[in-house]
Image 1 (cartoon, rainbow, N blue to C red):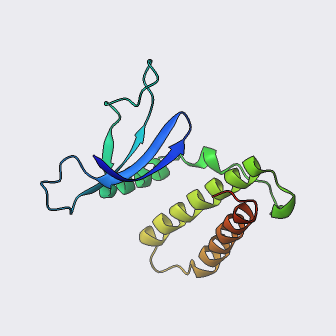
Image 2 (image 1 turned 90 degrees about the vertical axis):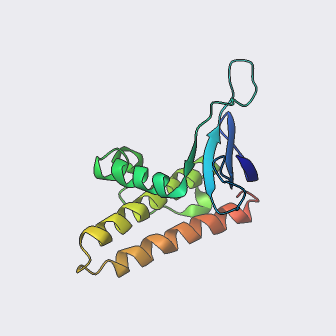
Image 3 (image 1 turned 180 degrees about the vertical axis):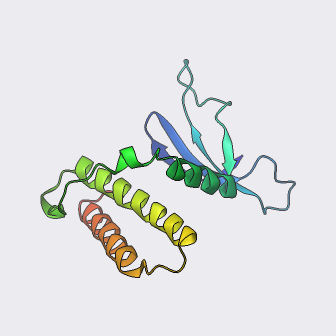
Length: 138
């Protein structure tokens, strides 16, 4: 992979870039979690994924209920201005997962009107991003 964007994540980095299998056409992009090995260096064995497979993996995880455990949310929306940074990050993650699952529901039930819920969840994500931005955190 030739990284074009890198962001610290947990004990390693998230990387987006030109895929290792790109044949020089600069068309194939991939993403990877570059984790640290026992010596503390980024592992060469960190796998990279094409985005279409990443989406399929997320859809499978959602369909198998693996993501629902990540959605443990309070029964009511809480005041974001009083939330800790960790609470804001958790809320962003929960709502983003819910949005992804809603997209899946929309594909499975295209005749249903999901717009209201989608807009409400999207608004919450933007509010969380805004609050993180006010605190100088991305």
